[in-house]
Length: 271
Ligand SMILES: [Zn+2]
Image 1 (cartoon, rainbow, N blue to C red):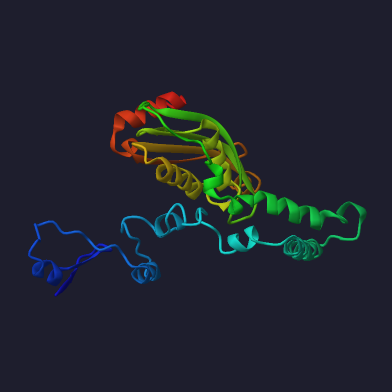
Image 2: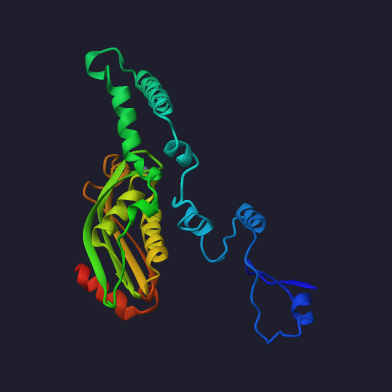
């Protein structure tokens, strides 16, 4: 008899009962990729309580070091100089179409090189897809008997809203409580930059930084807060200029312990 409980694991009781060494503890079988695919199709995530997103459906770091890569990330990373040139030209051609459709004269002097320039700018703004997390944290994870909160405030981030393809930018604050391992401080900013230089929503950006750090260091807890202004909001009259959006992601002891969370917020100057 195979009994399915509502979680993502299948427990095969026949095997357990036939095993004479069974000592009362059941080790759930991990989800197989095929089963994960089925879960994905019905929108149920392994944790059941979270919405389906790249953060909950995929591991923070792939076996080849890429972290939540986009569909074309690998082809970008592996491209030859000729392929890179072709990619740039195709983006530029598309930009020319957009400018023409907007009623512009693409042959006037000021716009002559804009499509190519924009193509290069877009490739830069999304360069985070090409980052390999092993290179990002290279030789910067240290064994250290430090168990107090580490906090880096005011990391500048520039990202692109994936709904409007316009910038959102602001500050990220990252904290963690180590469990024998620490990361070089500048790497926290590099980690934030890696995920910011992609098409994002602020909520996911916040969560990805926290989950990746958690995966790298296995710390006692991680907290990430991002405050950002979104051009799609402030420039379209949806809200007044100067409005900013705050998102946070708390993992481990920051999630479980109110005292830790409060200490963090106090250090941020938010309480
Ligand atoms: Zn937007």
